[in-house]
Length: 481
Image 1 (cartoon, rainbow, N blue to C red):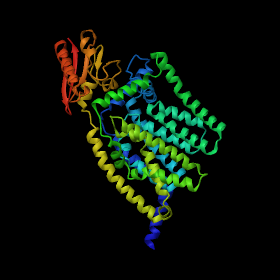
Image 2: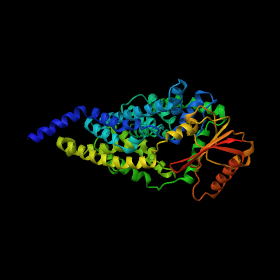
Image 3: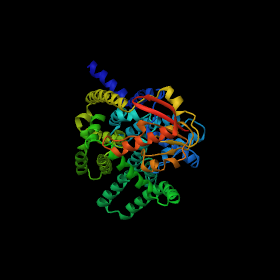
């Protein structure tokens, strides 16, 4: 009896204050990464920083990659324009939005199921190794996840479709594939139409959704049309770069299914959630919540299939659906009556899920750190990234320009034939790069030959001013004779 009363008290404390404890745990798990000095910037993060400089300097500094959406670069460029450190501000933005996303999944599941299931869902997402690792990295993944969850929260709360369209537009300008988010409200409207035949009401909602989406996205496409003469260029260029990267770097088709199993113990449960949702619809045909869950399931499945189809795979691309996998899995569990009504069983389940997730988190975070997390030596930062670069600067890696306010000549994709054929006409005063910047697949003999030819040209026409090796990468600074 004493033990039972004690467990009930613990349950009551967790029920009342659980979400705040989860948020505190989330901050603790993520904050240590904030204070690691000399963290290496990710390639994509460096590009976003440079795009921000390019936008706010009206093209005088930085660089542009047209296939990348503009919202995150705008968020990074503004602090730079205000003479603030965009790397620090960008890291803080990502950190805050990662914590906000955990609170949003709590609110969504609380609305769909109940408060205690919301707390469990938030805990699972807080312990997601992919979410933890990328929560302090300057990448667009966390703002993308935040906007997706905010859109779904508005959708679940029956907010005006105009505002849902606005959020879908913002999400799209963070990552173009987030345009798939429109599937959720559109599929729900379609199912409602099949059920109730309210044609005028449904058309009105579609129009409000479209107007909200276009208010955000149309100015961007108009600017692209004016500047490049083709408003579809970012989308076509994005498709081309995905194909090109996939030719040299690819993963197995089961990469994401195996990854999601490591992310959350509810992955397999989420797959069968569609049957539970359909069963609930059959029992209560007036409950529109289940139609919304079907729309979320459809979106999650399509995103999973789309990214599985691509050759290039990274678990961070799954951040847009990891919380939704948790949502669908938690909803399925919430329909098991013995779990839903028994407090002590609830507590045992929370403890088991926490232990399983924490162990998985430690293993996966170690893998992430071994694969991706590198610290830049202070000497490299001072004498390479912050070197006194003279004249026109040629780079193969955008990280160089992220550390300096320059407008480089950026050779995206490595050494191409055009660079070699017109080498004498490039008018580049300084070349700065490492051999790791120019990736050549083992089977790509042409790429290897072009890289060798470049080094021969540089050694004959330029002076080698800097040459160091760190972490298997050899760094060079060549200046014109």
